[in-house]
Image 1 (cartoon, rainbow, N blue to C red):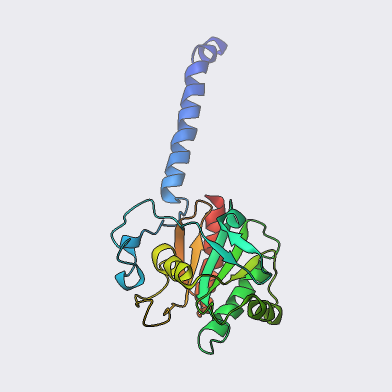
Image 2 (tube, rainbow, N blue to C red):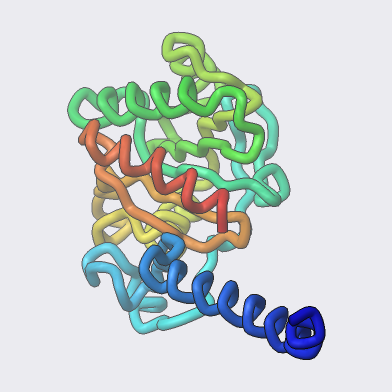
Length: 220
């Protein structure tokens, strides 16, 4: 009997290993790991995408930028290097959707206050009004954590180009005739500067989805 088991010991071990591998593969197939999509301009509504990037199907990332935050500090991609972040577009004197969006950003900040992997970035679409002093006043009123959340102003065309060509978060309106018609979208950006989600910044359910998606993104 011992001789029999000794003879087939190697076969039994191989069979056991193969069985474990097959079970693991079957489990993963039945319960696949959730992965967020990578949004390309050609997958987004054409009215939100500048004509110069409308047909881009891959490799779209947020372009480099240089803007000024509520403390007068220059903010660039370097400040968001190796970070997941949520971006939006607003203006401090807005009385419609912006207060709701800002309140939801405050809620996100509170939820992720101890998470050093995640930051927030809000761009003013009326930089001629939203000076550094105005942004600082707004930040203090809203309880903005300077280490986690930048409210930025700067060159109007640069901000508009970011909205239309990078974040895909503003409707197509000529710069010279109208102010930017920004959307209520919050944009989730990964550590590779890619767009991974769009969320209605006025909708509490979307904010919960955004927080869940951040957890998914951190596990990728």
